[in-house]
Length: 613
Image (cartoon, rainbow, N blue to C red; front, top):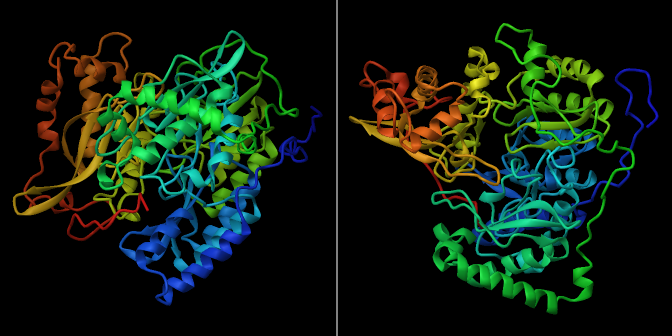
């Protein structure tokens, strides 16, 4: 690769070896505008219009039918600088001046006037993006691990396969009216990827020199959650599409269309029984293989394998680690740049290249920040794109070690230089009552408060907390993925005396990856006591842990009843937390009966959810 010696412009003239996919269609923007007019004229019923706009990625805003949340589909989470700049301009022109990165690698624009949605769609189409099927009863955004292609432990890069699957199913007639939404997640290795909590989860494998996948079916999070089941030991790559088609066809035929609360595929698998469903998928796959027209099969094309302008793997396989450049010992008193390197930068399998994680607060990023980030990616990343992460951050790959300081300085100039992206301090929070009809509590604001406090306390530098996570949802539906967190919370309401107070159910012991586990509900915690409760848990852990035991490991021992000293099981820790989690009467603590970001009396007000069409 020819190198420019001028810092900050090294990659300005490098263009991707494969054109960026064009996901959007201009005619869909015109059709959306046309149907908005028909709806306003009373020529389209509210239910029919709702179904239509959800299919086109426009989700109703909280208690306000005249506003929408526009969800931008980002297949594989990969987005380029021009697209980020366009999102910035659209956020300023039609939204609230900022965008939100979701836990499914989408980008959302909130509080867009209904009549302006088509203009947002038009701007997205111009740079290759779309909102099509980002909502509704169809195949949602296809996720791919942000480490895919740079992970030292992967067998091959799953990114092209995730995009091929996304291309095949978008606008595909076979999945436009499923019983409910359908999610497909690709991992890079056994540790990085949400494969056990998706309708279809895929881990790349190589057997006898042949590429393929281990496929999990029937997982998912929500009011009732299930871990996905392994279909077979190894599925060769030529059977990837037929397997996905088989699962979707079975769900389409047998899914529960009557009861919205139980119409995800995970319920079908659970109620039918895994062994029966497994046999049906394998039989259906054979039918798909024998009956699919060649012209249809050829629509599935795995493109952009390999980038000629990017370096090949030059290091021996090793486990991705933090602390790539400095020392094992970083403290809250260390320089901010050192803390950032410690918690936000990891080495790639390509020598002298690093992945930089940009810490966002609960996924929020302003238009100005998007533009500056786009410039840094364009000039300091050899890959020239970013990846959205399920932790609601951005991952920017292929940054040279010598450019890390400049990248950090640019982030600091726009308030994005916070440390803690890969630590317990980077709390995940869904949009909550800021925009969602189903939300009970303001999980979004709480996640920000957790992050700010934990950075202040230096939890991002604590090695004992390195493998722990905090995830928060505003209701039981798990958009904040609370069930796969070390300590998770989902919002609710509790009556204390004559008053209602915002509360969260706390869960312990969830985890992601191929060996993922669902968290176990422990106890209720008032919203204004969540931060104090987690601090107390960490304090107890520090006095109880055994040598080398991390917080996550200690919690797992407690769940098994294998703790020591004062805390041997869940009941012991609940007893120790009671004093922290109890609220005084409202007369003494009126603020504790209000939710974050709200100065008025708390009410558990919700409306019709729009997760399904």
